[in-house]
Length: 115
Length: 112
Image (tube, rainbow over all chains, first blue to last red):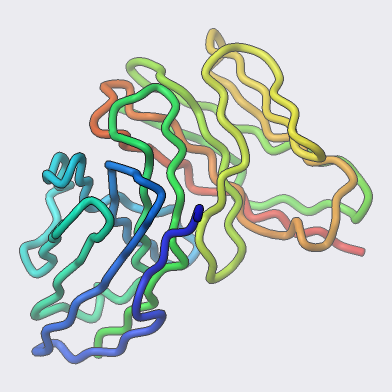
């Protein structure tokens, strides 16, 4: 199984809503990532978890809250988002966060629209 | 700082060969990736270079020159399905948790 799955595929939420994005992989990878991608732009790294511990937070606003319940799962909790947060949210995983060759496998993403 | 440059757009003809260039200026180097991304889909891994030279994988090849801070992706026998964005990404030289620094992407259009 070389797949990263993400749910939901699409999400529309109001600025007062609380929602969560979910990501799952069963490749035994120990590093997992959240990216945000706007149209015609490259992915922007948000968070990295390595061995279930948060290792990188790219100064992301606190309205985004990541969680790694176990080595296969990664969540992104959303609260009080702004319309400019509308984007494609990509999850990725890699074998670990530190080896020299560390291909990242991306999930299909969640298309988020904030009204 | 870290900077990665690649052309914004390219157009090529079906059956032809196209070369997408990427130059980088980083404070160190620890590997370069190429990803393909079709519109609305996830990026998919194409190649990885850490040593100088050419890596060939079917119709796709990637080249690296560390002294020049330069890489290219070569696509042969172009097909319509190769129309996509091609992302050059460099591993963070301080190897912070596998962090990748992406270029802006090159939008390739393949015409019949």
